[in-house]
Image 1 (cartoon, rainbow, N blue to C red):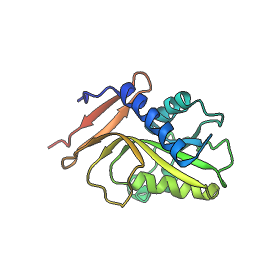
Image 2 (cartoon, one colour):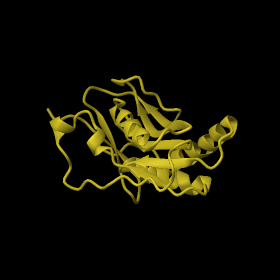
Image 3 (cartoon, rainbow, N blue to C red):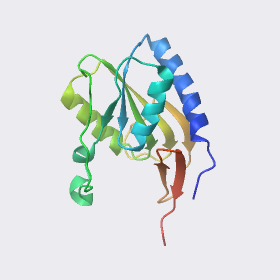
Image 4 (spheres, rainbow, N blue to C red):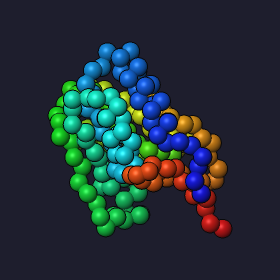
Length: 169
């Protein structure tokens, strides 16, 4: 079921909020890194709107997940691409939906394997209530309540749209 939210409008607002946030923190030209796949789609749009000089990075956290042995590996795992130095760099980490916080934990673990960033700003398109880990985004486009078993997924890349999946009974 589609969620009646204009992803393009939310990304536009998020880019304005992010630009203001980075200016307030005195951060210029951060490295933007999207988490595969939906986070990369959002990161691409933010990267274009912020017009940063750093190339866009992407993380595939499949090997870093704490449920890797339980859910297995997707047959088409692509490698992470970090085309800039992580050590000492201000990073904007972008994901599409934050639910439990486990994806972000895995992404941070992978980032730190590449080096120690000066800072990490977490930006998400959708923040769902009821996290399992104490991970909160610095900026989120939309806050939504979560019912038992509800899952939100970003489909794309063109057009980007949010889909809600309820558990089958």
